[in-house]
Amino acid sequence: MAIMLHPDTSADIARVSEALAMLTPRWNVRILSALAGQPLRYQEIVHEVPWLQSGQLSPKLRQLCEAGLVQRDEHSSRHVTYGHTDRAAELMTVLRLVATWAERYLGKPEQPLSAIEQIEDSLALLSGRHTAAILWVLKIRGEAGGRTLARLVMPGNEVTSVYPPLRQLVADALVDTDGMGQPYRLSASGAGLGPVLGALSAWAAGAPLPQGAQHPVWGRFKAAPAPQRWVSNQSPSQLPAPVTVPPPNRTVHAPSLAWQSGDLFSHATPPRPQALTAGGPRR
Image (cartoon, rainbow, N blue to C red):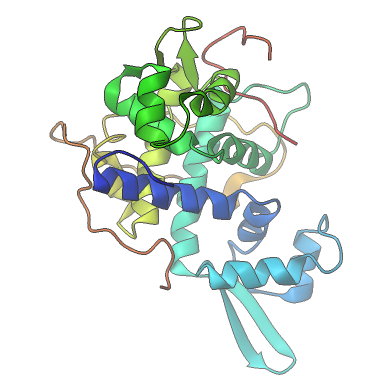
């Protein structure tokens, strides 16, 4: 994806987009959550994720191993276990921040959702093509018209190409506008993604998660309050509490990263009644 932005910002967006693309496929978050405790044997994982059809688990475990999130240990020819890598353990903290954001901003369905379902729906809102780039530009500029967004996010494409993703972001209540021809800006729920995107950016760059509070774009936020309760009987204990980070001591104006770029993984539509409510489930 070619983005006409500062090279550090463009690389940051690309890493976050790649991380979201890896997490969003169905069942990936559930498999990682199942492995949050002690390593499990294959049949034990099958018991934890019974929704997977026969033959679906093996390729997903292989993909997560290749991504550096799951470690496969062969103790003997008949004893193989799967567990988290250090990268996956850090990622669970990021997912806990996603759950906190969802509890505050995600549209409430008629039937309460589990924490995992809320995380899956939140990631689906963020994983659309060009979504991360548009959110970054609007956070940096405050507001921007469609032509400006098209020039920055989709250089070389027709200006009209930017409007389908913008319409989706407006429908998902992550972006606001006063009407056709008017500039776009982040909604309250879009701006509330600061802790999530700052931490996800730090994780994707291989930086310590507390550095998300000093992110050059998303670092100027107050710590999001913890949800008062979970919306289902499912225990959130497998998703550790987010790292508490102090607010940045200085305001960073230049959209350049404070850390070294690193590999992503361990190895090489009716209007919303309230702007504060983000889009509902995509199932």
